[in-house]
Length: 263
Image (tube, rainbow, N blue to C red; front, side, top):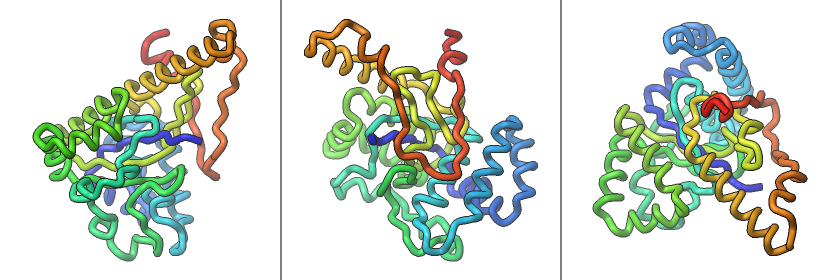
């Protein structure tokens, strides 16, 4: 399957307060959801995510357990951003490493598992984390450093850079860091209304998913033309399936885009 990448603005203190403190005291869920006006449905999903986090073992992969759960939890509280197939973790340019902060610099040792990668290694996984000071630095370097600009433009090609810069700007404006993850949200490009999300789909900025749909529809039209098929024939007969389901995760399927655009 492909990569459904998301970027989650969150501070190091919020990582502690919204996730690790709650692992230690689940009664905090009531306080946090009330203070942040989180609806009952997402309160239940939050509690379920914490329950899954409590099952994490010392031999588990941090990025696929706590790291991924943190990205899900962030989406219950505030906006996050989607980019299909584009991730900082995929870069082989060492120049980008200067902007990332490792989990052992953020999380106490007793909260870490034995296996920590600090990047996306599989589906359903957290990726790199950019602390708030490096968010500002990366924005500035994108404007002033040709090497960094070229690398980001290559990673986030086909207008996806606009979504990534939007995520960086949101993080900067709110004095937050930025956490990368994969498969927190899984848009259905054939029908966005049947997209899936482990977090709060309504907090996902829609630009990246719409861009994904436009690209997919263009590719399908080209295939239909090449194979002399009727326009729309592939879409009308297609069935979109998620083939790599993370276990014990409660997915949300809602008519988000229908409600968002009043369609």
